[in-house]
Each structure stands twice: as C-alpha cells, then as structure tokens.
Image (tube, rainbow, N blue to C red; front, side):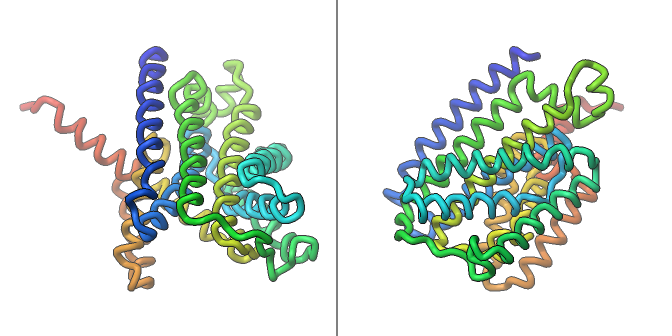
Length: 315
C-alpha cells in the first residue's frame, strides 16, 4: 500500500513539475486579464491546499486563514520598507513567521477541539487585526504603503506560481507518504492514535505550522501586488470564508479538491461579475446543496459516480 502511494507521489510530483514549467511561460502569450485571473487562482490554490491539509487530513477546521495572510503581508512590508530586503528572502521569512506564530499559539489552541478550535482560530485573527489597528508602529487603521514600486504583473504571476508550486509539493509529500496515515489517525480518533504511539500534538502542530507558513507566503505575495495594506482588508474574514468554500466545494480531504474548488469559485465569480448580489446568493446555494447531498464535494461526487458505473448490475 505504501509502495503504491510512493509511486503515485512520484507521478503526482512529475505532473506538478510539468504544469508549473508550462505555466511559467504563460506571461509570454497570455494577456493581463488572464494573468490577473491566474494570479488570483494561484494565491487561493496555495491557501486552499494548506486548509485542506489541516481540515481534511488532520481534522483542524480553521477560520484563521486571514490571520496568517495578514501576518505575512505585514512581515513582508516591514522587511521591504525597513531593510530593503529582496522579495524572495522577505517571503521566506514571512513563511517562517507564520510557522512560528502557529507554534506559539498551538499549546492554547490545541486544548480546544471541534467547533471550539474553529472559534479559537477566528478569535486569533481578530486579535491580530485589532493589534495592527491600535498599535501605531504598524500604521494603525491607515495601514502601510510599500516604499518601492511593485513588480510588474508577469513577475508577480511568477511569484504566485512559485508559492503554489511549493505548497503543492509539500502537500503531495504529506498525502503520499506515511505522514498521511498518521494524519488520518489523529483526525479520526486522537485518543486512540495516542494509545498506538502517535503523538497527536506534534502531528497537529506540523500540519498547522505548514499550512500557516504557506498562508503567510501567499499573503506576502498578495500584499506586494496591492502596494498598500490595511488591517480591515488584509485581515478580513472574507479570506477565511473564500478558502473554506473552495475546499468544501472541491472536496475536503481529497487531493484534487482545492484545485477544482478554486477553478469553480473563480469561474463562477467571473461569470457573475456584473451581478455581485446574485453571485453571493448562487454561491451560497451551491455550497448548501453540496454539503447536503455531496459532502465530499465535486471531486468526491465524480469519483462516486465513476465507481457506481463500474459496479456490475445485479438482479
């Protein structure tokens, strides 16, 4: 079983490499509109990959994605403005800051389970937002402006592509190795996993820190593109809601779930761009219907239909 998973991981890694290499040359033939769409899709894909690892594999349903997106944005702006640091190094340090914050708050958050953990992550995001508003060192409610000119759109697209590529490789490693078995054991029954010799705190911490580091990097790239950040937007709950919706629509715990969810939600948003009220209503209805009739999302529904079609007919 492990051998098949490892072989699948090699194939999946090769596919990721080929797709990333092909997308690298997209700015040469794609217009600004498609680059904007691609940039947004790559940022959300990175966030959804991390969320899917936490919720689908480790059972940590979080509403704190906005916390780490905002943290990464402020760390990157601070490093670029104060130290004139190269953007790649600033993004790497933002990822380290995201993982460090996750490690710092995990002893308190992991005492909470289920819905209480979800509420705790939401409270953490709100706490960080209020800190940025009330501390003048961080620009207060006005926010911070980037001192240097942002890179052009192709360069930003490449940055988002690198972040999504690293996130996909990391999640593939977690999904195609022994780590996936350990994560699922903790997700299904934390106490039983502990009796079998698994250390649930360390397993959950690894998933939480990795997802937080990915979110912080994605937030840093988004901030560079904006050129200006303020607490109400960069720490907005909409980040967490969008990521959760994409993962649920695609399929929580399924490898292709984040990708399918991102494509579905962004395509729906573009089709209904002139009707924002209808967009919110339709997206909500789709989400409710999927949760009720297809809890495994679009990917899970398609896989079930294929499995059902292969079953031999019985009298």
